[in-house]
Image: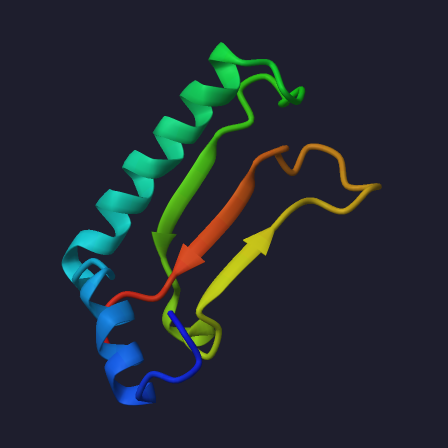
Length: 91
């Protein structure tokens, strides 16, 4: 997009490429699986074994945030090594 475009038109264009609310979580899960497969096939970085990725709707009490990444702190043990990424779905 260029800066000389109408902001409303730019918003419409971005929105047209965004999945509908009921497809957001399934699409995010598919994309996450695809990315995991790329890293498994091409060892660009070392990922923790069985770390997993969970993509789920944002809980009601966190709807003020649009996406969150939660990882254990450096001294937390037994809390799991995966990250939790939440996306808001719907209004």
